[in-house]
Image 1 (spheres, rainbow, N blue to C red):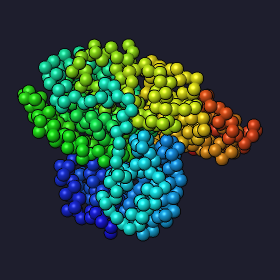
Image 2 (image 1 turned 120 degrees about the vertical axis):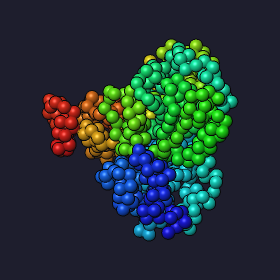
Image 3 (image 1 turned 90 degrees about the horizontal axis):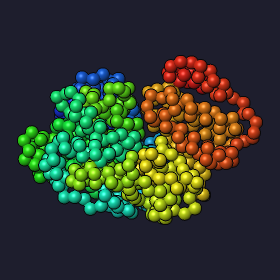
Image 4 (image 1 turned 30 degrees about the vertical axis):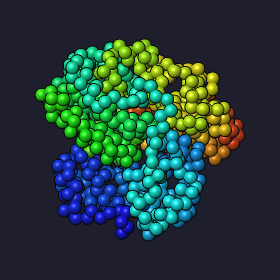
Amino acid sequence: MSLLAGPVVSTDADIAQVLARHGCDPHALVQILRELQAAQGWLSRSCLSGVAASLGLTLAHVEGVAGFYRFFHTRPVGRYRILFSDNVTDRMLGSETLLADLCQRLGVAPGHPRADGLVSVERTSCTGLCDQGPALLVNHHQVVTRLDANRVAELAALVLDEVPVAQWPAAWFAVQHKICRADVLLGAPAAPGQALAAAVARGPGAVLAEIKLSNLRGRGGAGFGTGLKWELCRRAPGAEHVVVCNADEGEPGTFKDRVLLGRHADDVFEGMAIAAHVIGARRGLVYLRGEYRFLLEPLQQVLERRRGEHLLGAAIQGVEGFDFDIDIHVGAGAYVCGEESSLIESLEGKRGTPRIRPPFPVEHGYLGHPTIVNNVETFCAVGHIARKGGAWWAAIGTRQSTGTKIHSVSGDCERPGLYEYPFGTRIGRILEDCGARDTQAVQVGGPSGVCLSAFEFGRRIAFEDVPTAGAFMVFDRSRDMFDVARGFAHFFAHESCGFCTPCRVGTELVVKRMDKLAAGQGSRHDIDVLFELDRLMHTATHCGLGASACNPLRDTIQKFRPAYERHLKSLHFVPGFDLDAELSIARQMTGRDDVGAHLENRA
């Protein structure tokens, strides 16, 4: 066994040690499995059985959780587990060529461990490093940025020599904070405790009034009013209230939260403490995406320092009864957990399946307690509002979209990085500032957002015009927009949680049609079927993932149809499964699952 993998956890005593660290709490199951896998390399059935028995859970439940998250392995994998980021921006920078080169040097096929168990190489969804890609993850813990042919050759040699990752060149692991334009949120951080002192001086009710006056809307994409959310939670009955920070930044092309957590962690934690002051919470949780595992220790150090400064813990800033602390939960690779109810399910140690709503988290959230879930960027804004007031924030941006917005800019531009602007800023202004040339399209808000053509660059970033969660991917005229949409289709099919049939089957059917077109075997009928699938999935899926899965497909067909036409075999119908006819039958059926089951059986 290489020193890389560490000791194998195989005895009841070893498992008990990990369980004891988490108080044998079944709600910590995801964290328990993550720590066990970090020690032994993968999760054997005997290990899962021991965990289930110790926590009073069924083996089926534990295996179901282990099988849900893509960073958990229930079969042996390489002692070096290398995951290449597979976002479109990584591929534009040559990641596929680099992956093939590494596999050739290591004598391994993608997705299969080498026979001697030394190494496995696979692809994973966007790792949140689009501004410094191509990038990869090693053992789900360490990132390697700015890959090139030389770095890949050196990496292969280190693996073959079984050099522990900790001894690899430190420069490889450097993650830069590429802030290209700063405004309110990305400027110089305030002194720790300053915003909290202002909030304590105002009092919970007055702080809530300022948040409502500011018209601050959630920065995670949906744009729900922060003040209203907090007010609903504050009013909800319950002995305990909970504050959750959604740091599961899984939307491809987005990396703003990574920088905020790395450079402005105090602002994030301060915003959470202010929220706790308003709603009367004693417990806070940060859901940190698995790809950002490298941020865990630095964030824990900030939390510990804040406890020493009486900014967390009991009697914060000397105020009796103001008791609040924060724990960090690390995800295990599941895009759907960015949805707040899925995130809560994961925090509770379960599969990240979206809940049926109502009830909403503000009434019935984490462990049944009233819970607010806000984005990293939202909590950063809270501290500024606590210090300067709601009217000040409301004067920035537009009437419906107040304040500033941070954009993660990547793709075909000279200066990728973070750009912060007041809401209402033109798309064209951002392109000019980042050094984009000959741009044909911009994907705003990630794959689930909107694709804009050059005719739309006069539009503005705002909830009333072009809303966004933060991703801003630039494509010049050398790019095939069909290939871009096809990559996004594969992403959604891979990330579907599988709970509802329309999404599980629909995303796979979209991939099949797109792959058929890519192979030059498609017809215009296939394009028509893609439109039909979009209409069906938009209305029949359980959560927003399925409803938005066809957004890039719809936009690119409408705005870049020649890119699709170039892939057509002929104008004649291609024989085979007539999905158009099947959809007509399916639309006459009632019930979402019935429609999906019909498609699944016929496909």
